[in-house]
Length: 247
Image (cartoon, rainbow, N blue to C red):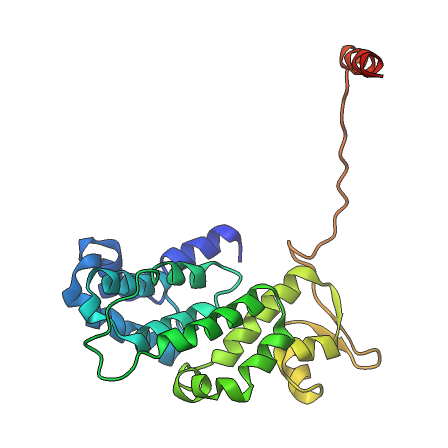
């Protein structure tokens, strides 16, 4: 997908309903009475593996303007969805709307966001830095079991979405890579499961050498660049005279 197409899909996802389009694009974006519609749409995204950053940002903006509407579980789910948009800046865009933390006096239980936010930020940093094995180690650690049990378990295809982040990185940086390394990036065991996964991507695995070949694309194609500078004689004379004067 070209950068222009990716930007267009980000601004207006093809799966966005007309009602949500009217809310996101019009003045009703800031109407607090519509927050429940946008929240329902977020949970539709969670169940269907769809994603709409602008609609989710609209929720966070409404929470800023109307602190009494604040729902920490909604915010956490928005951040989890934004995690797998890496390397795009969606997660940081969401974080930027949390600077003024809403008053939580109306909540019946303690706000879980302050405790989870550093963890989610660390997970995002690991993905953004392409440190995929470290991401999987942290994500599957005992410390993050509450995050898995209470949140990501509800996000359909969350781990597959993380793998897509790794696939985008590998596709843009490599033409050949070992299957062992790819397995660590995708958190998949070497063998039939990994072979099936890379085959669906159109990649070729040489079982004898354990090397995966990735088709050329606009990002991983190596092209030599020739830089040619033309210096005219008068310019050269000025350089020489300036050098002689400073010696």
